[in-house]
Image 1: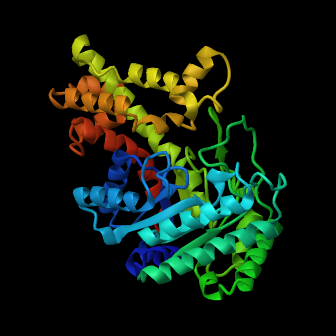
Image 2: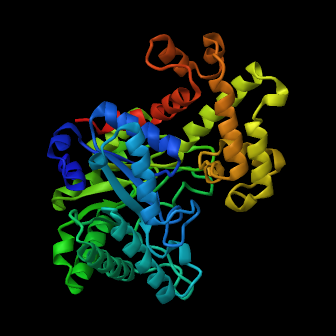
Length: 427
């Protein structure tokens, strides 16, 4: 399975150190900076992915087009000191997802432009996700339709790479059992694991679609299949990985040489569960809300520290600002969070889906977050206060592993999550 790292990054040395690779699905600069420092310390490549709703040819919800995102990531890497050659950039859920309300042909034309923009910008890991129905589609698409649309997008990617003279040809992720991006909106009790027959059928129908479109060479770069290993999270609960339920699915890889499974929605899994996933062939682990959940925990802990150390008139009032903006601009949460006012208030802060992550770039919230950092940068945070609000960072500070500056504390908190993924992927 270590070969997957080599195929993604071209780094054969890294492949000998890793059994798998984790994917950071975030566009927050503080999260990405923390991930880059983890990669530096581990001397490994770093896979960063933007999703189709974050970054597209129109700007997505981040306001960035694919080429903008590449420049954004490179600037952070240059500042952190991570060589650009150690970065692998991927596009997640690339397809007609954002345009499902349109007729299928119109949505697919936009998806083609999306794929072209990603590959032209230098993204090399392409998740082809055509599993969703569009306005004039039946409620559930057949595997043949999904595979046909995916091969159509692959052809666009290949043409873009050829036109741009890309040194690295794209590698592809396929699969029709794609979990909902960002976690489930409904309450969950258990998740059905993909059946072995369904996994093999999905590969076979995609293989035929690639052959029909003359994409045999590109098929050699289909490196992973998205399946459901039985992991998910909703707003308040996590469905934990149970290896015994995925044993038959794992054995499918014996019939798929050169391929691994890609596991989505692995956020909040226990360390031993992540290690077991990699061991069982789920060699690409995706994490998104889990890292921004940790970011929010860090920022709100710092806001609590600020309330202890800074006079009321000078405080950032970050938590109040976030709540005010989310209530004034409910578009990113109101369809997902239900219940009475108290229940929705708790979900706006603590939901595992972490829909507050859509708001960190809001100008008012961004200004408050930066004021918080500025306020606490100018004072010494007493270690006994640090113990109260960030106990793990307190011990890291006591051991001399970090200092007590706000950005150091934030990155340490985020790396609590990333470090678990890094450990799970090590050989």
